Image: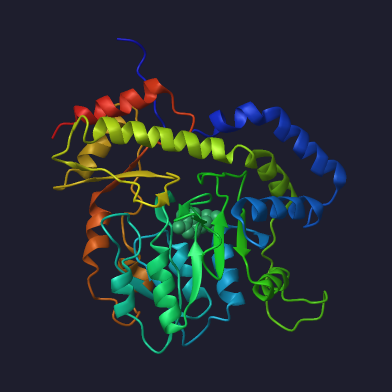
Length: 378
Ligand SMILES: *Cc1c(COP(=O)(O)O)cnc(C)c1O
């Protein structure tokens, strides 16, 4: 027996260490510039993201959460409005709807891809429904054809939540180009992970882009003349410059995540069904490009927590994204109709477990995860 192999859920130092010299140079460049609010570093990063995503506009903001909030503000969503969103997602998706005074209307998810069930969404449309937020969860796009059909039929605005999914595609179309607006996040655990908080809004709509830019700086246009009430939602030049130094690597990171996922799917899946009785593996649906921000398995029959402990005992990190669906959160308990069950996402919350998938995993580490799952005590 050699040294026990340690496999953390995420290892940022392995990603950033090879770029250390470039990142330090970048820091020095911004330090020397003394430009610490907006300006050329933010603009250069915005232009590169717009080009990569294929959107007309990219606007750097303070976080993925603020990208969602600011997008809803720019769309003019507010009190009396209903916004459809998944219940099985990170809190910010629905939290931002409530923060603009609108009502989140929770939609069940699909077993296939953890994303919105668009038939369930259609059933929940009322004359107050103004927008829909498809989340591209874990790195795979929601069914944007179905989203577009519903949005067109009912005049809804579409806000993509691609916080976990920069680079993902739905039938040749990239996340960030398929809605009226799109929110990205550079939280360190995302596929393009920053050095603190950061986010980006993309859009092909010139007027919406202009509104977002004005609301990003308190709604002043020109400065100190306020037609609208905005906030401080700016991305720091330092963050923008450091992220731009990493941006070239994004296709490489995604490629490695995809290779790691392929290994898991091959060895845990059909060609060698290690635990087919207990494990439901995620999949890449036809016509979509999964970017695997998370590799999330489902462990059936109440064995999820046992597997998590077994992994931990073997020095393997894992996490539950997400343990409580949003329609079961205390802060939403007063929403109308909230007692209704959303059976698929409730089941998912009991079964999901995300295992290490980060780009820098070694073959030995991946082997250790697969072997450890293979002799799980169930
Ligand atoms: C991370 C995330 C957010 C929020 O992004 P932050 O940058 O952490 O504010 C929003 N939605 C989803 C689905 C996320 O995963």
